[in-house]
Length: 195
Image 1 (cartoon, rainbow, N blue to C red):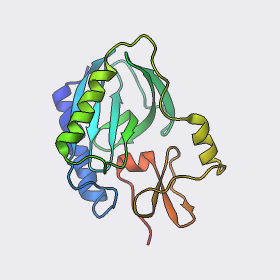
Image 2: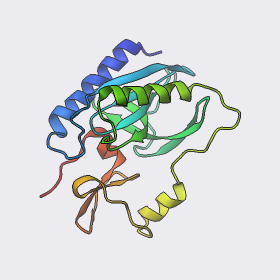
Image 3: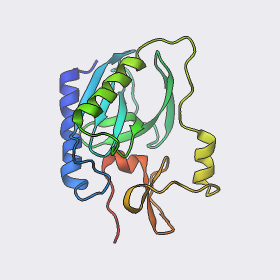
Image 4: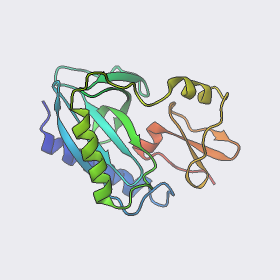
């Protein structure tokens, strides 16, 4: 079982380092926000909570002490059931944190007017996540639509300042001048834009 105080300290340090070293000058940043963890707790012997950054907000799940996720393929999506719903998480490796699984809640973060607004949204999500419901909704991502986008059968919505977000994959590609950003890149701060 993780020491939650130590875990949240490591998460915040890692994402502050990502912000300082890799995210400066990126138009996705909301300058009103800062890196902060919210609602970390134990659920079925795993640690789960939310990381807020100026570029995204994600639910992060860490393995239980008796679990080994080292053989899981990076970028692989795996469903996990919580009291309120079932969500698909992507396997990630984040420097300073190690192997974890993430579920994107918001990106980019421009709809949040300040840190308190983002904290309230994250806190509300964590409270709702742990409340049992009779019939949970399905994961809000449309997997069929995503497949069509990845196969080039449907257009990707252009993001902020010439960026577009691609839900899956580990490589960014050029598409009509737009730089596609994968969710893994966004989480890890790997957004070196070629000029």
